[in-house]
Image (cartoon, rainbow, N blue to C red; front, side):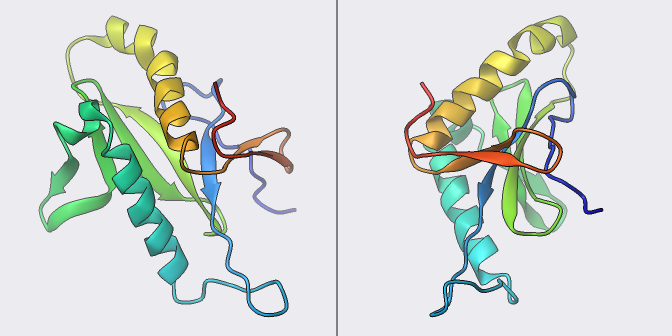
Length: 146
């Protein structure tokens, strides 16, 4: 049995995580992203979309010892958006993490609300997927999450 697609958020395993599928097709209608170019292309577009949010644009990408961590973005003072590969590398998982700040109660209260706002913004530009069971998912067309 494979890894499945039942992705949840790091801080609350009761909340399902959304992801963006990476679709690479050749003339026959199928293909693979062997070089990772499609993943990097979609990742860059996704980061640009997230950084359009004023709460993200103010803080930007998370600095690391080697420049910038290309898959983590500050979401205000309390959260971090983490863009990671799905199990098979055919999508980008949109995860949400706590920042290490001293306001745990407020973080817990705003966690799902903030994640949903982020997802609504991303869905204005991207088709998103979410698990419907352990091995099946639903695809949500662009601008359908209200």
